[in-house]
Image 1 (spheres, helix red, strand yellow):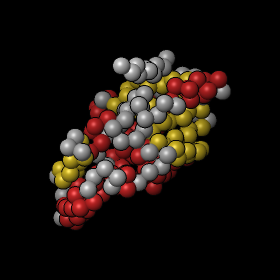
Image 2 (cartoon, rainbow, N blue to C red):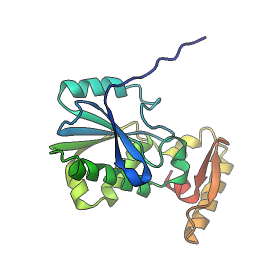
Image 3 (cartoon, rainbow, N blue to C red):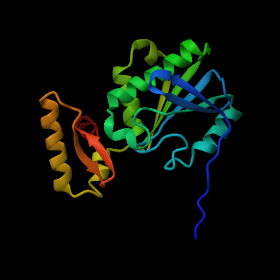
Image 4 (spheres, rainbow, N blue to C red):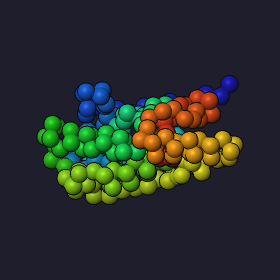
Length: 198
């Protein structure tokens, strides 16, 4: 049998939105004034399996005096189907607010590092975040940006995906973005809004 390597990081796990039970894993130079926020793709969370570069990046950032933050958003892991890019941007804003206010950290720079759908989250944040939050961000890295809808077209029949988008658009037009309209590969349920956000 093939042995799969495990990723491990030393660091600190802390809550940034207690009401929603959202947490961030901080590694690299914990407490640094330069922070890279790694935004994972669909179905990922801490130590994203699709991002084998996370541990080496944390080590490099530590060597340069910076921290790596991996936030657990409401859409992390298989919860993505119940969310939206707008809600992901809200969670990211809550993370930055906690860094700025509650932890009393003097931040010199925040860099958003989006992987796959994390690129869309970073873009949504830059469109919708309050000015103070945008002002903290000094850079954005889009690593493996993707159109999830185009990616799904590789594994989901075109007619099925088109029907889901049409149904989702009809729900959204009727002011009902929350109904489940699609199951990705019979695994992850998705609301009308998330289908439209793909």
